[in-house]
Length: 161
Image 1 (tube, rainbow, N blue to C red):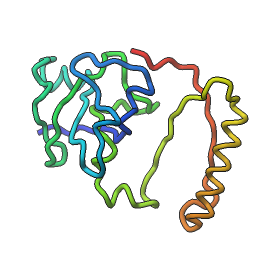
Image 2: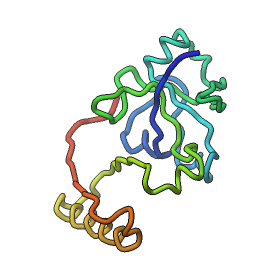
Image 3: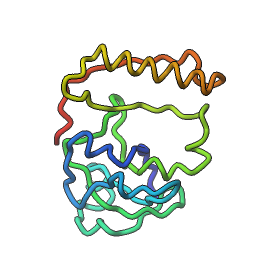
């Protein structure tokens, strides 16, 4: 048994970042069909090397994370460590596998939203749009969303690995 940690991400996470797998494939938005519908895992390159001796045959096998079975669909490139600044996850799984209660709970989630500006959209326009969304969410969910800060943070970093 190994102690590992990972990230819950949306099905389009890897596509948005434009990264390619070292081995296998990444899960996609089309793999998700509701809570617990995408029992897939992408391994970090480091975990693949440490725990699986860089065996490409790991793709298609089942691993257990917190006693739950997940099918290994791919391995991230050696240069890709995710989008967290201070943590390099050992794996990524689709957020839909967090469970129905997890997905519905508004008070225990810490979510980072990533996106790209459409051509012709300025950072100010995007900020205004985010603020409008935050105001609407605060109206709909005043007990949990009122006063939450929204900030557009631009990055020039290329995630392509």
